[in-house]
Amino acid sequence: MTKKVYLNSFGNFRAIAIILIVTVHTIGASGLKNDSVLDAFFLNIILGSTSLFVFISGYMFHYVFYEKFSYGRFIKGKIKTVFIPYLVLGFLPILTWVFFRPNAYNGDYNFGFNGLLGEYLLPIVKYYSTGQFMTAYWYIPFAMLIFLLSPVFVLFIRFSLTNRMVIIFLFSGVSCFLHRSILNENIFQNALYFFPIYLIGISFSMHKESVLIFFKGKGFFLFTLVVLFSYIQVVTGNNGIYTKDALIITKIDIMFIQKILLCFLISLFLIKYESRKSLILTKISEMSFSIYFIHPFLLFAAYKVNFGFSKDEGSWLTLFLMVFMVISLCCFISVGVKFLLGARSRYFIGY
Image 1: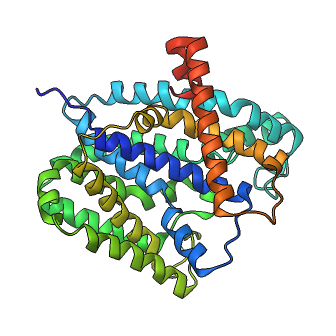
Image 2: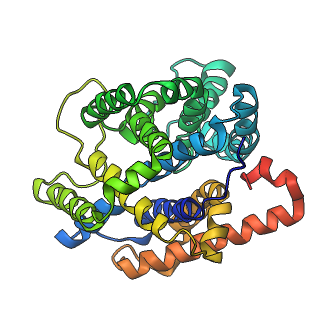
Image 3: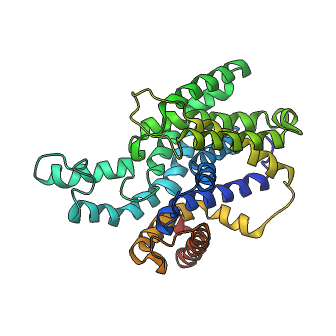
């Protein structure tokens, strides 16, 4: 059994992914307006960056966990470092929604009958099961569902290459017409949507050398395709993330295709510079989950105090400055919590 070597390229990829995710979530607080074709074009590139995280997770599932896979040990580890921090950090926000803003989501969390069960217990369960109590927290119940499906991914790895490719193409076709759920509230729809991207990440890890050979010298071609699909969104007026109810068939999700291409483009570029290490990216990568957990609280504060900017003054510079501030504060808080709690900090912030 070979010892797994730390992949500097995918550590850097994880750091880039979390920076882009925080950037997307900071757009509203920054006051950036989508007023021009150029704005829409660049926003289409960075929106939907969750796909990058899912791709990386699939890659690491095969690279790190598959060889010695134990379902019980795998799930236990995810409960400790992902689900318990989610429960802890969600406790006060959920109590706030349930007790002080029970109709915040237009009655979606009001079960229509009084008493402990209808007014408190069921709303609490639903908030935890959907993650709708904080920006970005929908990803945690979604991720736990993906983790629970790990035996399916183990089976996928054991299929023949032909069968794996057929499965990826079929599920990708489904995702192109399925789209993400409205407000990311349906974790089952989101799981089906991101399912092929996770499989592509697994397959990339399984056939890394072959993929590198296939795409050798094609980096500019991939870049052109990413630009092209983003531009197609602009000219067709379908900017941003595609969301809808699962059973309604409308248009093809162009962003889904663009994000798969972007995953390959970033991976190939970073693998080319595998030996180059960045202390900043390494630390951000190590704290990626704690940044994910903490940044919604900072953005909530940003909406309240607005960082001194009015909503009419938003710009890309404002956005970049706010992202820098948010990520820096997340890292500072993560280091502080780890200093105070030691190894137990993983149960509170995932780091």
